[in-house]
Amino acid sequence: MGRPVGTEIRRHGPVAARSVVPHYACLDRKRRGPAVCTNAVVPPQAVLDSAILRSVTDALDPEAITRAVTKALAELTKRRDQLAERRAGIERELGLVQQRLDRLIDALADGSLPQEELKNRLTAENLEEEDPRGRA
Picture (cartoon, helix red, strand yellow):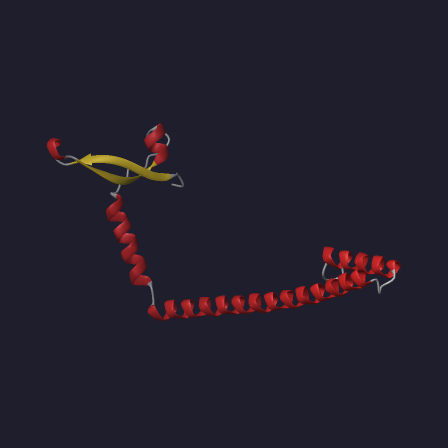
C-alpha cells in the first residue's frame, strides 16, 4: 500500500493474434520484485477506468453541477468586470500623463516656460512615471 502505480503491458489472445492490453500494477513490484511489494493485483486499465468513470457519473448530481457552473461563471464575470474597470482607469491615467507631457513639449517648443520650471516638471513626470501611484 502506498506504492507507485503505473502501466504494465500484457499480451492476451492466441499466439497468432495477440493483442497488447495495458494493466495497472505496482511499479515497485514490477521493477524490484515481490520482496519489496506483495501486491500482485493487476487489473486491466479499461475495466478499472470504466468502473471509476461509472461511479463518478453515478455520484454526480445535476443540480450540484448547475450550481457549480453558475458560481464559476459569476466569478469569471466579476473578474472580467474588475479587469475592465482597471483597464479604464489605466487608460484615463495614461491620457492625463500624455496631456501633461504634450503641454510641457509645447511650452518647451514656444519657450513660454522658464528653463528651471521645465526641469522641475520633467523631473516630477519622471518620478510619477516610475511609480504612477506617487510612491517611490
